[in-house]
Image (cartoon, rainbow, N blue to C red; front, side):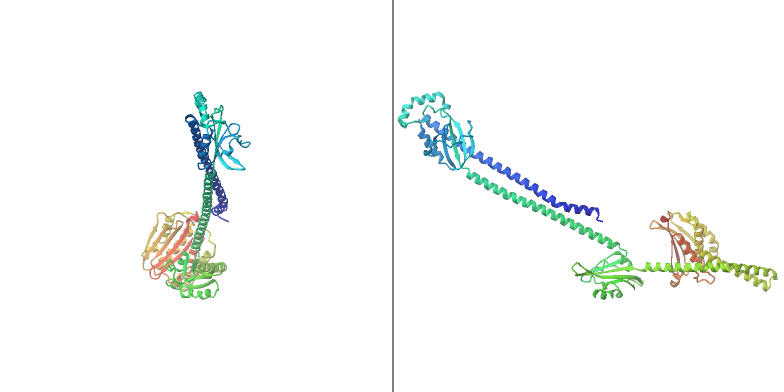
Length: 592
């Protein structure tokens, strides 16, 4: 099942293309809107420039015409001349003065005078005292930006100007010649239209150039934006992949580090590349210093013999061997090893897995011991049942004959010896039955300080007689234990008596209690006797094993059985010539 954070990350990566497309679309819309605004702004700017230029030309013609008429008595020829000269200015396509019916009164070309403008030309010309403009598109004429204005040549000067013109009419006729003159005629105060056609090509070319630049810049912006979004997407994917790789690496490292088996990996050059904590715990070697070195610099020769099999491409599965990694301790291990190949079948290294078989061997020995004890118990129960009844009869007969013989006679003494031997044999059978009988516990919360003091009082007289000093060291936080006080007292007595028997010339018996790992209560019973030899240390809990001349060999076996019944642990450590320590461990957290 995929963890939630990883699923969320995958959904983010799957949604990213849609986010990219949406972001690119928004960017494109923004660029198009900006381009449209720029186009509109350029068009407005061009219209304002051309209309202002046309207005200046119209004002100039108006001013020139009125000045000439007032000062020099101009006629239509002079106005025509003014129009022609003005029309020669750059970007001026044409210039005309029209009457309200569309007849050309004066124009930039003399051949169009008295002609009429095409139908529909006057449509859209709205009478106004201000300058207006429009675009004029005719199939036979280039496209023009027309600026126009309605005006009256004599309207602004009133009757004084008209009277002056009537007095000067004969003179003006002599100066200008005969003929019809629309300026000096009676219709001079009628409304006229001045039209200036300007060439918009320079502005349109500039505007097109601006549009092209805008489109290029917009395209570049779009490309940069898309590239940026793609880069962000790739970066996000890269970061996600890097995070996933880091998570996977951390997960793998944590799993490998937490493995209960030892692991050693080499690179393709055969040098140690990785090891976990378990391999150091099993072997007792410091692999942190061996990283990057050849395996033969730290591993034993017998272990290195596996390399030949790996070099031949063979895999090793659960091969058991005994190795000495550090010191003189022999470690029983199970070895598995194989070559590491990548997806292309190329060799990248080797991996070796070590499993400590010490605990397995201990459990196997414990199982064999329990099976042996079970068999002995079954046999003991049957034998004890068959022997106890005859012993009772023998004791009864011996007691009868002892009463028949005279005091201090040899026969009476022999009968007494027979009774004593029967009693000793009966005690041995009782111990055998006690060992064979399943342990039944009456568990109750018990103050261990009081229980230890009670058990010590039972052996205090014997300890004093042997000049053995008894010391109790119980920690203040030592908890109450859920135990059977009677059975545990029996256990303590057996251990005390063994210690006292080992210290015939006096010594010290120390009983210490402490808490370890916040859940184990440990009671240690230590003597400073001669100790136990290593070859006997593994046998002391076996039934009927004893080194004492008169011992039955069931005391420590019964102790072991009582501690096991309490779900506890008993261990022993001993140094010859220094003494022995029995450790009794109780898991008080599990008991609660």
